[in-house]
Image 1 (cartoon, rainbow, N blue to C red):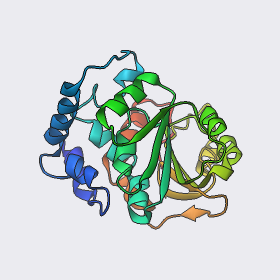
Image 2: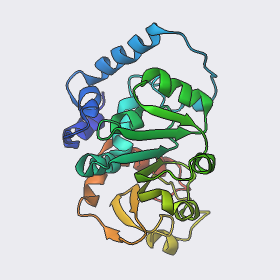
Image 3: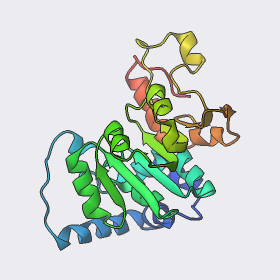
Length: 249
């Protein structure tokens, strides 16, 4: 483990209600313990998988077992801290991928659902985390098929969900957290970038994380803490290596 990863864990305070993150990421010996958990789940029953480029994503426990907990816990950090602090009664994760983040959050509520369009991702999620609900669907189809559903919080990490979609489905949620975006110079002028035009309007709780409820605006007092972690320095290194990108802030 590199010095940055050690530092990231040091400043990543433990959670009050989501003990799985503590157990499988923050505690001493957490990564081998999570590997043992995954391997035990795989021994119980074989299941078919489609191996493609998406399957090799860094948030897939089967493709990146030693590092996947860090990838999720650090990128989601502002959102996870918010969930741990507020304990929403119901959560929908749009684009849940292979389900680890949804599983982490399912400790705070009995009504937590992960939705993803990838059949292979949902297959992995259901296999590894059978006590959490996962649905293979895109966002529009899920809401069309569940017209009366309502969640206190929806989370979307690095998905394609834009403000138009967030507003369109406003009746289905109380608050929406949008995580992650890499603005390219070809998309925004420097003035637009400095004015945060690449972010959805709302309450910014981290450099890569915005809370939308239709009304609240501004910057959280905890916002600067998102800079001191693995995710930010990973994005910073990516921006420097790929000169076409703006620095994250």
